[in-house]
Image (tube, rainbow, N blue to C red; front, side, top):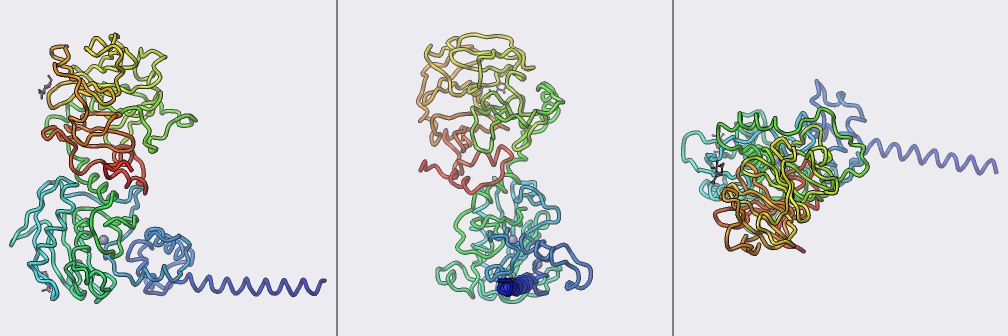
Amino acid sequence: MAASCSVLCIIVLILQVKCNTIFLEMNTPTPEEASFLRRYGYLPEAQGDIDFSYTPQSLAEAVRKMQQFAGLPPTGNLDEETRSLFKKKRCGVKDIEKSPRSRRYILQQGWGKKTITYRVLNGSSTLEKERVRELMALGLAVWAPHGGLRFKQLDDGHADIQVSFASKDHGDGFPFDGPGRVVAHAFPPPHGAMHFDDDEVWGDGADEDISDDDVTDFFAVAVHEIGHALGLSHSNVKASVMYPYYQVPVEKLHMDDILGMQELYLKEELPSSGESTERASRSSLAPHFTQTADSREEDLPDLCLSHYDTIQAIHDKIYVFEEEWVWVFRDRRELEEGYPRRIHDVFIGLPKHVQFIRAIYQKINGNIVIFSGRNYWEFSRRFRLVRRGRASEFGLPRRIELTTAFLSNYNNRTYLISDDHFWRYDEQRDAMDRGYPKHMAAWRRIPTPVEAAMVWKGDTYFFCGPRFWRFDNELVEAHEYYPLPTAQVWFPCEPTPEMNKYLTNDES
Ligand SMILES: *[C@@H]1O[C@H](CO)[C@@H](O)[C@H](O)[C@H]1NC(C)=O
Ligand SMILES: *[C@@H]1O[C@H](CO)[C@@H](O)[C@H](O)[C@H]1NC(C)=O
Ligand SMILES: [Zn+2]
Ligand SMILES: [Zn+2]
């Protein structure tokens, strides 16, 4: 008995030693692999000899981070698939910036202007300059609408984005590496240069190029590098254009790319000058709480699940209602301190039997009206109840319950929406306009029933479930590039794979 046990123990011991050895071997990056990890931001910059600068733990941690970014299981093991990443064609820009932020797609800044110039300095031996110019125009057109940008081609002089081909050391401290591996890199604003490795064989997008491993598709790489030249950093979302490894074909932007553009170019759009002082004085009217909300509340709803009763802009802030709670955002994704709060603590005098808010809007005079059931309550700019009455006083039929309401900045009319119909109320005359209700189908590409409608920074938005649409008041229809996912654009929610489903209008 005793003998057989010790034999078994020895076998177990031998196995362990063997496994450990293999494990260590697999986890030791070669000097080239370590320099790859350092170059793309997974290892800190080392002083002196790379062989002695890192502990096995820090190397394994760097491998894990690289795997995670590439969408592989973060095992820390240098298995075959992981090792293949070191040899893949890719962009030369770092994956991880020095100070990692929670939301990955923000780099520094955009161009701070809407018209951006570009110039193609030269072509490669396989792709002539004229063709590069055409493909650049197509690539820029992919990005333009998502930032409201216009691109202007220059033939000479200095442009914001300068495109050139070069090989090996080309004077910017980031030498190219001959055929394969790094194929291009680009610099964020205000630099904006895009460099393509002239040692690659550049193809112009024909099908045979795409399936040929030795040919690198210029358009696919250009769309990615344009993202950098506009200020975006790398994404770990494999289907996104900003994924660092070469992928073909590139057909359209991923939600993740679009969110990055929104963040850089659409968020900062502020109304014209003179607003800042007014904004400051108005914001002091909102209730102010020093004490923070009790986040241990068990029944606190999660906005990232895209459930909310309604959303409305009040005093230039975004109010989001769900059940008996209200969240207040200073700007998209910027939660005001002390929120969420209970609606009865914010709207002083709101009766207890009103347990949620579906229809709320701010009048031209700044007062706030809440509709619930067949009644309404009007609050002062300081959120004190000043009046209450029947919704029928607005000229609504008695049996109607509103689903949402908003004041349009386009014509200063109040729209009162109930399921698939809407009424138009004229506040100056205190009367309903003639010819209403109308069917919601009058607003093309806006779904019914909408859960919320509001005007934010001059634009009208409609919300339904997890999606929202921007409305074009002139064309009376939703803007072409909507819907987009509400939680990721308006609330500070992390991107999710599901959000891509909210990109299109198909209800499937
Ligand atoms: C293209 O222009 C850049 C910048 O002027 C230069 O460094 C590079 O050598 C040129 N490439 C070719 C292939 O002529
Ligand atoms: C709406 O009313 C406000 C306040 O009276 C006024 O400043 C604004 O110009 C009006 N807008 C339109 C489109 O009539
Ligand atoms: Zn890149
Ligand atoms: Zn360069």
